[in-house]
Image (cartoon, rainbow, N blue to C red):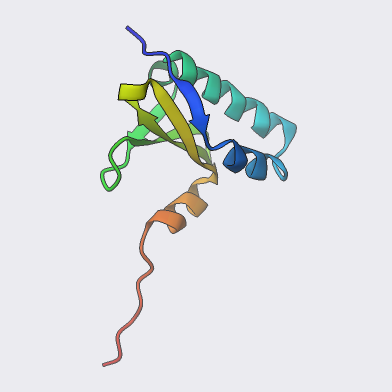
Length: 102
């Protein structure tokens, strides 16, 4: 049984990304958002949990394009955390390594 979720936060993240995205990219992201909302995203998309941040999921919208959402099951809600290139999301979450002086 699919759980219906309501988008409660992250519209500004989506709007910021959409300013530079093509219409085709916006369309596939909007489709993915509807799938998250109606509970079918886990059946349609490749989705990966974030072990460092429980409740957060990376949705492979299309090759090279991901959307990160945080699901709040108790509230039947979700929020958009990130939309964009895979590489940018990895850079944003992984700590930057700095070399220590020897």
